[in-house]
Image 1 (cartoon, rainbow, N blue to C red):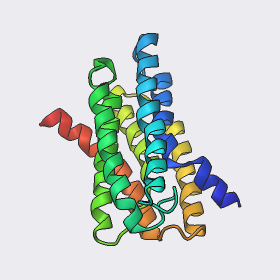
Image 2 (image 1 turned 60 degrees about the vertical axis):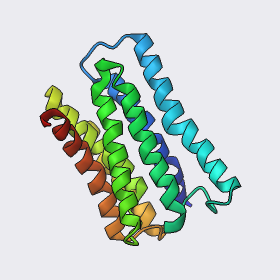
Image 3 (image 1 turned 90 degrees about the vertical axis):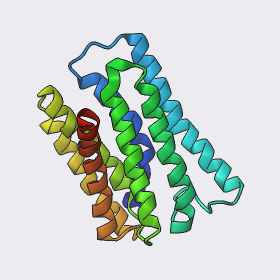
Length: 201
């Protein structure tokens, strides 16, 4: 029961909004309240409302059997769609120039989801739960480098949450250890690699 609660409470759909809120609270940069509201509205609709509506539609069309996307076949189309949706959110946020960091976070997340989608064709069901928390870890590691801020406590808490999520997913037999490790690795790596490429290409 506890492991199911952890998997539901720390569902990957909450991480983009959570990351955006923490970003606005911790980043050492003044951002107008109107921009903050606009930003959070874009993130909430794009990363929370639309995915839920799309999953509901996919279920109605019998493209998926459950919202948990348990099988590889069920994951393919939704993952592809959500990856492009994340990149689209990033593109929209680039228009609010002062939050380029957050825009890159979404683009990086979209790239990580695309990589996860590619692995489905090799019969590997990478954990989206650990990819999501890994993305947050990588994001705040990147911000600590850029702004020379000490996010050590926050990153430690996120690693603790990763441990809880990983244990829950393993106990529920939703993923193998390799799939858990691939998820968090993709999440962290893309948050470090994509900003580097953005700044140097």
